[in-house]
Length: 373
Ligand code: SF4
Ligand code: SF4
Image (cartoon, rainbow, N blue to C red; front, side):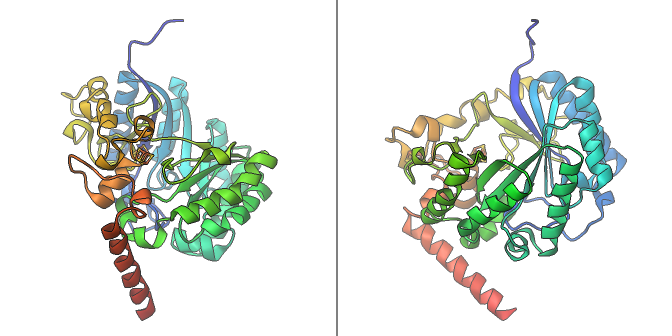
């Protein structure tokens, strides 16, 4: 077998568009375009050509395992088909992260034709009220269920996701029941992690340790006794809770700087360490710039030395080399990024009185604001 001379990258997340037809409270996209369902706003030929050119440049410079097509809502733009043509042409696997509500029979048939690895769709509760509270409207619940059934009818593999928040942690079992009834057995339990747009929702949605214990207690029988493949897709620092007791639920750590890292390409052309990070690696604002060598960019110190930047709180911890303090992106967004950054807000809410007090103020302001509506 001939080995590629291009550096190996496990995965690349391509953010096709800033546009989304939903308004999810937990969305990390600080740049998302709100208030329209007109995808033509974000599908002008120039943005499509640039998106394709950037992706071609990445694929020419790197040996990419697979692409994750995301957004915004990737199915809201016709550019998704250009990228799927490209991945088919180059023999690279593609998976899609979608809210599912725009899926039609025609779209599902085209996805089946391109043999996407899977479409990941999120349900945040077993009812229209709970799902809608997270997604920005109750009507999205039926639309998403319809999308899931349409994908299944056309034989498109589906992965389920639930963003676990303070509001829905007690409804994990019922939501997994719903996924089971839809025939979906691979589930990502993604702990809410405040970044970008979602920072303003942290007080309302950030789950506590107790919330996550309840969530995993409810999920365990599905993984252990009913054959569901469940993974916790955001880090749970081992000092917050014992994760071993939840086997076979899978738990991971932040992948930045490891062979499993998923880089993110934004709609404007910035390459970032992951989707939740906002900084462009190397300060490069558009990788299309002919002077930018992508293969060098992914060995920038922001990538290779990322894991050595351990929060002061974690310095003496035995888990520090793997855990690194949890999600550094959420810590940056919520707590700043000084030379000695803080650990994950999920942990920090239980350690730091000032931070907990800040969340309590935000919480009371939200209640007051909602009371005045
Ligand atoms: S590295 Fe930090 S966040 Fe991770 S387990 Fe240790 S003390 Fe907790
Ligand atoms: S910084 Fe957070 S979101 Fe990004 S890869 Fe690490 S854990 Fe995941």
